[in-house]
Length: 284
Ligand SMILES: C[S@@+](CC[C@H](N)C(=O)[O-])C[C@H]1O[C@@H](n2cnc3c(N)ncnc32)[C@H](O)[C@@H]1O
Image (tube, rainbow, N blue to C red):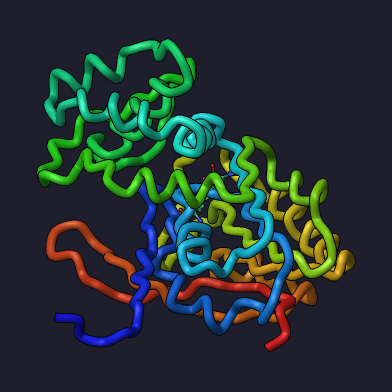
């Protein structure tokens, strides 16, 4: 029997498919108070695990073009392959096993094409020790096997849906964050989540990225914020809660302090909250 005539459309908010340092899933609950009421195109130049893009796109809050980019070309290849060849990526991952010997043999493989490269990247990210992206001097991934358990570790069921989101009006490329300047127009929104390269006493985070984000990069970022405001576009920037960051970005927008859940300590680790900075020129 039909309960009522109302057609309920369920929205699945897609979660990142990769473990990624500095992931911003914790920030999504703050987005309603941060977003402009309306914006034109969307730009995310430090894409990482893509948690913010996936959240906004799932909720149909990105209605125009999305420009997604990251410096890490292996990471960007994953999103491009999901965009164009997700069935082939899934088929390959389905042949992989979460076992020590298999892990080390696959880690040593020189991928034959970009599809295989993406499948191996996702596999290593999910089964390695801590999902960190670390390569040696020759550019080879060198993180050990994780001995992680859980039957859904290699689950790809969200890939077709994510592939659809990435295929709608979305440009994906590997580039430095200043690429934003090329396509920026008035009323666009730029979400910027750079690596937090400032270590500080409260939570001591340093990003172990292949490309370290230097103080010169932070200065280039400050200039980009100025460029965005002068283009009459919006920015939302996350950054480390540190006096030197407050000083560098002073006057470039409103500073808001948000709290992020964090776990500190090794044995007997404690859940706690740490501050992070958000600079924005979105007027509420
Ligand atoms: C904190 S992570 C982004 C995390 C992402 N918001 C999420 O939720 O998973 C920062 C990203 O910046 C990228 N990156 C580092 N230097 C860059 C640069 N100069 N230009 C563009 N991306 C860069 C790194 O590869 C990394 O993926």
